Amino acid sequence: CDVTLRMIEGELYQLTKTGVVNLTEEEHLEIIRRKTAYLFGGCAQIGSILGELPAPQQLALRDYGFNLGIAFQLADDLLDYTADEEVLGKPVGGDVREGKMTLPLIHALTMLHGVEREQLADVLQNFSDDRWGELTALLESSGSFDCARQLIENHIDRALNSLDLLPRSD
Image 1 (cartoon, one colour):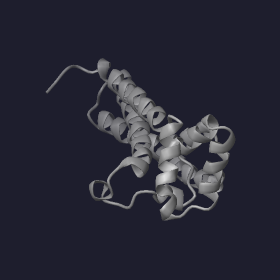
Image 2 (image 1 turned 30 degrees about the vertical axis):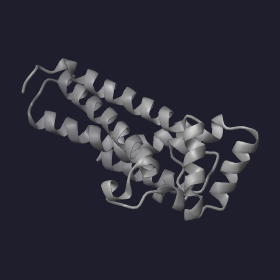
Image 3 (image 1 turned 120 degrees about the vertical axis):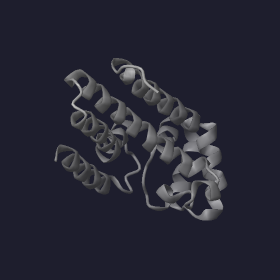
């Protein structure tokens, strides 16, 4: 029930932030935690509860799922800008079209200044498919893709470190 409540809160919170250009990284991560990470964590913990693992191992699996969920969502957000549409299996750029601010955009808006920041703001306000290359070039030059990749790797490392409490197995 707690996981479901947090997911609903995350959906509602995201709806209140749709189209908000000055969304902070922390606000975005809170949406990710509520919409995805708690679900992944809850699923991992439920398996450990049903498997009657000791409480520390249950919490370790919850933390594993939680961090995996964050990494998953950040990777999904990054792929929305960097993936090949055929490989991704869905159109790229969906978040921008829906007015969703994700980590690459949030990071770029904090890193870019002057003309580049104005250019990014203009692309976001007047987005069309023919401006896709302009948008991705700005995100690349601001280091936003690298920032997202680093945060994904950090959460994968945290997830894997959570498994240290569990016995090794195939």
